[in-house]
Length: 512
Image 1 (cartoon, one colour):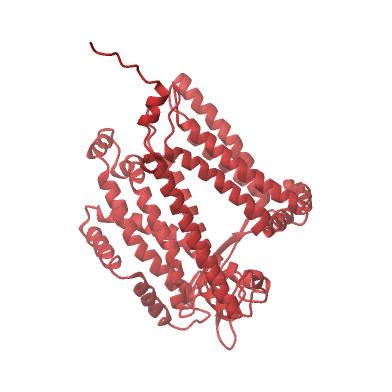
Image 2: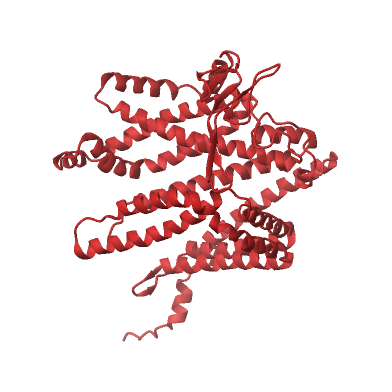
């Protein structure tokens, strides 16, 4: 007769089924990630400590105090050619890089769009010229093109008072390129405040008109209303903008109040912001994992992400209080200076004209030179700008062409069936859809042109790399200078990526 077996308890059964720790996949995954993190942090800490010890053994103490000391160098061009401190010299070099990057991005996009469209043209001459432009320039290294432009510009005739090609408007010589300069006048900030108010009014008007269209049908007049309101406002506010000069008083009060914030209070505020950011990220992360039935089961990676967010906030607090307490003091001083500058832009004595301009001039003397009135590029800056623009435009042209060809042929046929002309179909149907496709690769080209501005050192232009190298040779602060370079280009890359990703998200089709 068979003997009945007594069933084991569920807890004992679970204990028998649970693998040991050294074979548990979840434990092993966590252990591997923690070990990898410790190894990376430890390696970086060891390398940085060794570098600092070796520098101090050689009589070099790495730090940032030297940034407040005299620069003792003269820059070839920039916002300050004779900076009074090393930090000011580096800032002048950064501004030079940023100016070239922004101008280069705009010009290369316009030129790339024109060349890309020309390569798709049915006109044989335009098509072949665009093909030669692309296939030639994108296969020549950018540094070679920059040096070629430098050779061409330095071989142009000498600068004279009647130099052209358009005397008094556009002057090109072996000393550079100079054209008219439009700049912000005294009344710009008052005018900008009023235009901001006009923009708020325009937003609500557009919202009301679009709601009426959705409710009653027909066509919306939001576009025409926007142009009318902003156009009339721009003209009217051009003359009456001094009426907001009273804003100087509250801005001055903000500057005084900001400068009076105690350093521990600012440290506490920044610590609270770091902790709040971590808590908000974890809350949003958990919300993204919720289903109609409740919170979904979290994986080991999910827990690791939340723990990492908390650790990052804790490290930020430690940095603020222990390793870098001066950051709070810098924020207080810089913030006070910012509001002080804003207050100075308002008040009595400010003219009503928001924008002004000046034509280029040539100063006569023993040697003819460009005057301070125009927008002038030295041959070094012009060679770098032309080289970057033409090189990058050749890639952008191919990206644009590929994006247009990727748009379904039926879209073009539908536009033609609606009676749209070729140019109307291109502007209203094809290009809007093509830009949804080309934005990610366009962002890569914008990153490339920004990072390639570091090639300014090859032509002797005073950018952040050339200035940093000169300062490092004088102060033996190569480690700090390299850190500044990396942080500067990292900030530029992250900013461009954020802008491109935002535009790409707005262009994306919202699916149900």
